[in-house]
Length: 353
Image (cartoon, rainbow, N blue to C red; front, side, top):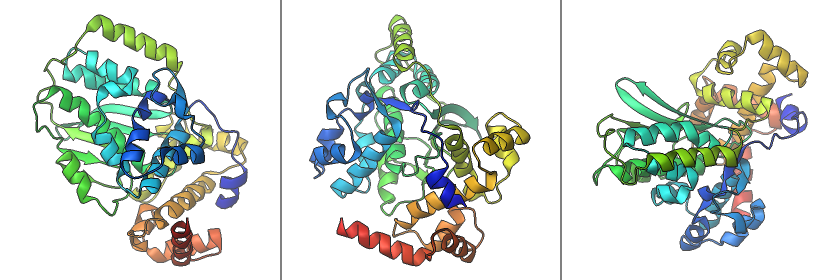
């Protein structure tokens, strides 16, 4: 059963998925300013507040992401990550922000950001790609066990956008912003924050932009400093990290669910392996590909059902079902409860807390 696998059959967590604590610079002040109690958030998540904002200290990536989700709950600000990211200037990011600022041109800054961000934040994929004549700075967490990650995605896109804003004239905006999570209730705020159209339920998060202005000099360009900073980041991080194997597979499954039919061959190719090797490695953990699909669907179903504005039909689509009835039958099989009833009980519990 997928539910049994998710709860009992995971291998010990691979802790090689840290993020440098500079990524949380100013988070305590922002929580307080938006009506929350930062110390309560840190205590619930188990965060050492003294290390937040320090350039060479690390946080567990899952704890960092959970902190942002908890901060949204604590402050009652569903768009906490969006607005925190909009104020987050590159120099606040520590080494990775300084690397972007020290690059000779904006184009070089974006290339270095894509190359070095997985050292700043392990178990992460960042890529600079071109599609349909537009460039895309893509970002996603590879660890499929980190389910609730909306706030992190929105603040990271804001961080990335502010690298462009550091160099380009006032009023710059991307062509579009893409998010892998479903559309939130207050989605108009996202269009206003980025001054751009926003796409939801995508395979990755991304800023989509034209290649105009990429030859502009960065205000703090310094090639010798850039070289020192990249060496420092590699030394501090040690590696780009990697999730545990099953979490990595679940991350690739999650990315493809809403596209419909999910094939083992696609996931094997994404992981640079063969279907047979992938099946063999899954078997070593006592798992099958279908087990992981069901476990991933169950985790995401719970996540989506806690969002009261999402219709059940939309949730079914996001999980790769063609009909809501198929999703309802599957969810009842997993939990012994209908999605509608589970949502009602979950929202009542959240209201009491």
